[in-house]
Length: 249
Ligand code: FPP
Image (cartoon, rainbow, N blue to C red):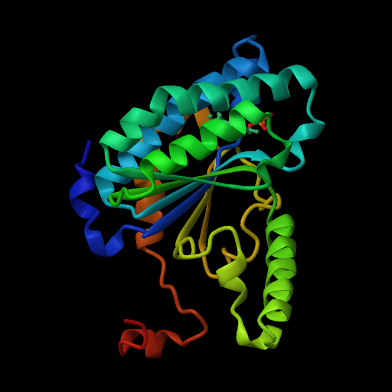
């Protein structure tokens, strides 16, 4: 196999990768196993992807672990997902910290158990000063929720400071405030939709869809996605000629 890692240089590595990790259930059902077996395998794929992103020098990895709509799933599956979330935080906190990775959870955490909320706060605090990569886990997250909470907080802040809403930037009130926008948006599992993930933030992201089911997503699949990204010309509204002339630094 050609060593494509050498073709991926810093210039072609996305600064921020966002992933919808879809296909756990189908992966398990294909092996006559319960859907939750797929979620457990999904945690392993996530661990590998974190390691690969860190080794490529990606600054931010954002993954969709649980959407605001996922509460509609059977209670047993929701319970397993919550349990996995807690277990993964417990098991991986020290490893993340040792690897200088900062953890940030985005989403409405008020619906989580007190114990899970406490663990999230604890791991975020432990890793808050880490600088090699930021791992953002979207949990009970929805893009529409994010925009809505941002607008409410912005309006409140404007009122309290006696200023106009025009004096503020919506980005500063989104749950991703301070993070760069995703350069590469990946969805595994064959569906080609956004499913209420980072609606505002992916305005200019490059979209990459693959039929690979999330538990099968490994370093090679990530490399293929980054290679695809590296062939795209991002124009941000400019013309090709302007880009060739160096319009975007
Ligand atoms: C989508 O697959 C996946 C999810 C709803 C959950 C993603 C969770 C993990 C990868 C593991 C837990 C994560 C953490 C951070 C501990 P699906 O169930 O919709 O698959 P399907 O489309 O095949 O049914």
